Image: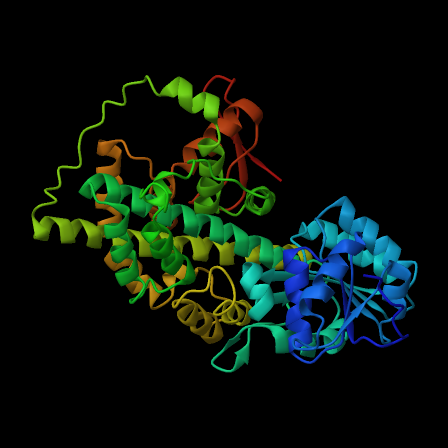
Length: 492
């Protein structure tokens, strides 16, 4: 088909990049009453979208054959959403748009961009009189089409223009939109990055729970699907638990084999988990659950290393669970459930600690309770206990530790005995549980009245004169380790 020349200022908003996510977001906007300009580097994708959905049943699309016509079709102040690969492609499209725009126009990146790139791009656009918005979008393909959770950064002025549209197309929870202005420049992409890191930990610890149940009970995937489905009716109610039951229930039609047994056990990643861990190291925030989950994906893909290690004797024992005994079986399942709940809370608590530190480092005023509230629908990590997180931060915005707030303080202390049993049993049985184990270790670290870090600081002072502080008097001290009698001196 030949794409006609669109009328000037005939679209309310535009989407550049019509892959699955971009096309679905454009359809969502159109279905909600907005005239949507659409274009793509390859005109074939624009033609495909219009051919499939341009009959008016989903709303008004304004197709453009090239970027000049695309920009000209946007009503001022123009709003153009970029939906292309993160990195150089985003910069390239952004520069092309900026060259055709006027002061006050808005460029929006709805991809998974690194937040430091967003900070750079926002400064670049601001110098040209443009607004640049980095918006985190969670919910996958279906969320983009029917209502995602949206986390826009940028200026308040840009949100005045963009916010009503995003709030309308977002998921809604009890009538409230799952969209809110997060903060300046890179704040939106920062919280989306941490969101994805939490998602990594959540997915990994669910997989560990499945692995424990499968080994410990010698149970078929379909049986475990019923276990996860029952868990989804209680406090573990969440999108990821729900889809876990669906995946475990799926059977490969040609072979009759559970699909999960035919999928290669190597987990891929697109980089947001890695970015979360790298940024957490810069901020000195211990996101141990996210870190272990990210490393677990790397280990699963270490084909040569795994092949080399298969001949090693792990000296592992058995689980010692009599799966024919309903009482023993149910007790083990309950321990795994409680351990899973505790580990999920640790992951969320660490994630919100990271958001607090990132906000302080970059001068963002992020409403953590408001953020939790917009994750309650549409997004991948939506879960029932986000209601409790929302209330906890509403009651105390400066909350120092989420897992120490009610109801989590009570629940994690109730669940920790199960977590200890599960980690110990896994260690004896030789089943890897990196997120379960790291969650328990973090809990014990954070609650400990005194840590062996005192010895580390003594070692640092010994070899590098890095000094230390004392618990009995103020000041900075250094021991002259090489001198006879090792006298101590006070510095500064």
